Image (cartoon, rainbow, N blue to C red; front, side):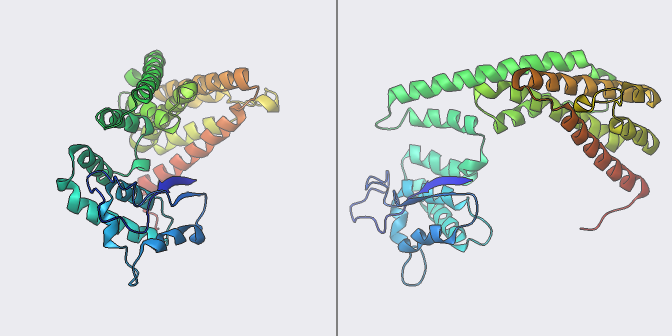
Length: 321
């Protein structure tokens, strides 16, 4: 889904203010992009702002706010949407040309946008950055700013609580000490999870995703840099082996398969077993759905793929594109 507002009016007035776009966002209010797939008809609105040669009218560059919105909208293009590629080139060129001649607030906004478009950024970090800008804007709504700060503080508190909980989990798991060759990327994993589900009500989801991501990193390091092919085959077989004594509905891993593994792999296997079953239990308790068989199958497919890569590396094989 793409959703953003793009702004052009056909041309700015002669008295338009280049500093603030005070002519009412000359590039403003004409439409929006909101679609799940390419829709050429929805882009026809951009043709209203081109001259007889098919180029965007230079007069549009007088509206800074509008140009910023056009620039942001252009980054939502699907492949082959030439008009949005043209809009991006037009907007970025003119924003670069004028950014040194505008007031400090707009200068910061322009530099920020040119550095990285809005929808590529982390939503909550972007909100924190924008609060500092918004509080200096003329006509700032203090109640709105206060509400935004309060919400950000709630989000930040949730993130900090999850980080403490994850740190305890990681310390109790003991993989960092026992598998010293692996990467400890717990904070990065939580940051990634929080960027996916940034709202505080999804704190449990953030925590579960961060755990899974860190476990993936650990197992990836075992396959990539430490385990022998023979050891990796045994580990993959253990992950692939279901507990046939359980009812099919609750099919999980067979702990007896762990006995054939070297000691360092036993630790990893048991950590994975406990963590995934804990996540599955929480989902069953809260949602009434047993996801453990699906999680087990997903891990099995992942480990099989890791094993293929390990065999490629061991044999010196380089797959073609």
